Length: 291
Ligand code: FE2
Image 1 (cartoon, rainbow, N blue to C red):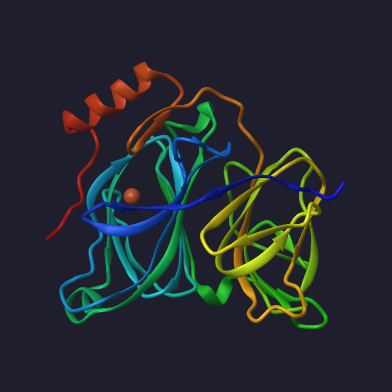
Image 2 (tube, rainbow, N blue to C red; image 1 turned 180 degrees about the horizontal axis):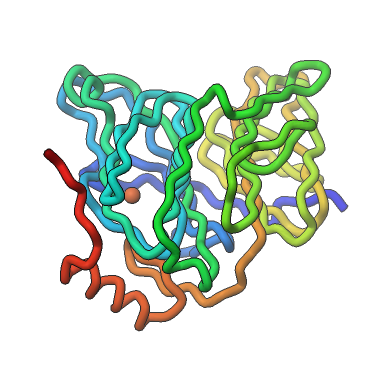
């Protein structure tokens, strides 16, 4: 059965971290999570002047994984486990916060000083209860190691961040099995992408307009389509369309566990969230070492 769009959610704009603009389809009042996904933020696209670009200075996380994928610009990150690096256009950084990290995510120094473009995504993937207190870990995948593929007519192209599409498979090792794909569709593109039957799945369009699912739904820029049951999804752009589309396809095995969340802490119970706050406030999260 080919999946249909069951609900359409239009992303709202809000300020995050030190004051950078994101488009956030969820969590919102109408959609708290798409188990196992807790949050999707589209950072930008934004053009910053000198001194304007803002990021998210030192802040904690516990109980889930963050996946950052950049399309334009560069983020610098550093964390309490001693990791440091730059996430440039096309790169992916996968951080398992586990029992807790403090990290900082800032536009690269040259963008903060001289201005520039920033565009990227951050997804939060929940950890199962048994892994919430695991030691933190990082996976950094440069753009050159992200597999790409295209349909024989070249009209649909995909970058496979997690999972498998058009015969290529991503190398990333995820605690919670997920699919994460960045599709570029030209007018006339048609693909049927297999999806595991039990996975919850959604499509987020971030440029142009695409036909999503077998129900004839057309999603525009900034719209998320939550997919119903089935073992595949149809993605297309009509051949007469003036422009193509860019979209993310995400799917994951739902955890079906209680979710208690407060800002950067996502646990199973309110008591665990209070514990996370207490641990953070009493300095039991390590700090970023700066020399
Ligand atoms: Fe963060």
